[in-house]
Image 1 (cartoon, rainbow, N blue to C red):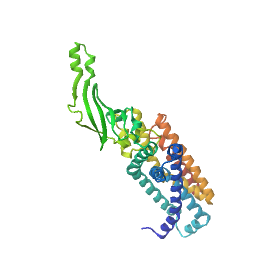
Image 2 (cartoon, rainbow, N blue to C red):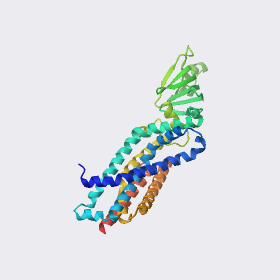
Image 3 (cartoon, one colour):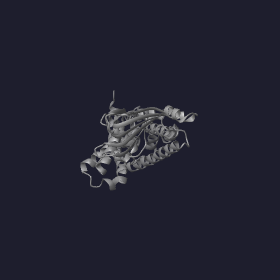
Image 4 (cartoon, rainbow, N blue to C red):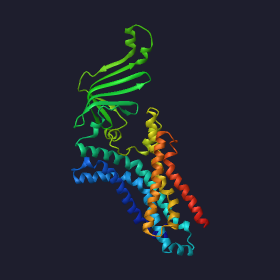
Length: 373
């Protein structure tokens, strides 16, 4: 049950929190648009606006911790400068009781960030990449995947051309089971509902271990070729189920410098997938830890914001300045920690947490000194 004090503090905190989300979130979106501005000039205004809206979920989960810091600095600073905190303490309202409202906001923001990262951000980021290629090239981003070897679970997909209508040409799918290679080649194909449908296909299975032994050439050839089957009808379809859709493949492998489109569970699965190369597993693990650290930062950065607001944030200008200092410190530690984790300088579970845990420790020390004073 919310008390009158809780409602009053929420009325004070929510406007600067929403302002911070829009301000910082807008800056993140604009920073993502500016490097691509030369490619999107001339696109319809409505489409461009929708593209920027699709970037907001990713931006908001990234800036939520610093928006909350700004709200705490503004509210606590005003309450302290207007002697309202002194009046509350005179009325037997402990400072930790006042801070509890902001702690609850931090916990709620962290939980929402986790949910958005799991269910909203992946779909939004996939749509961002898809719409970008349609705005800049007037076609699907499939053309960016031409010639690439696309790893999809235990398969590798390659195609040599992609038409504007989404059809593929000269498609190859490879799968290795030890020394046994299964190779599917097709004249053409198309992505449909989580699978690729192939036409004019031929499937071969080769046991390359047969080449290791000694024997006559005919026997070796029979041992090498386990299967050689081709479609009797060139128009007969072969459906191969994939773990990634067309849009997900485009989002992951088309380039362009966009944010990763995997959910938390997808990242956890890829981090533990022994089939994937080591570099891809480590990258997935680092991204997972970064997203978790960003969510937890909604709570831990309050440990810095509260003592700063009580000790220094006597005006809005000072509050904004302090929030920028905290933001810069956290972002730099997060970025360099992630970089060091990806390159193997520090363990995966340490790098992305450097900013979140480091500032939390600084906040604990500041709170202890404030209480001692």
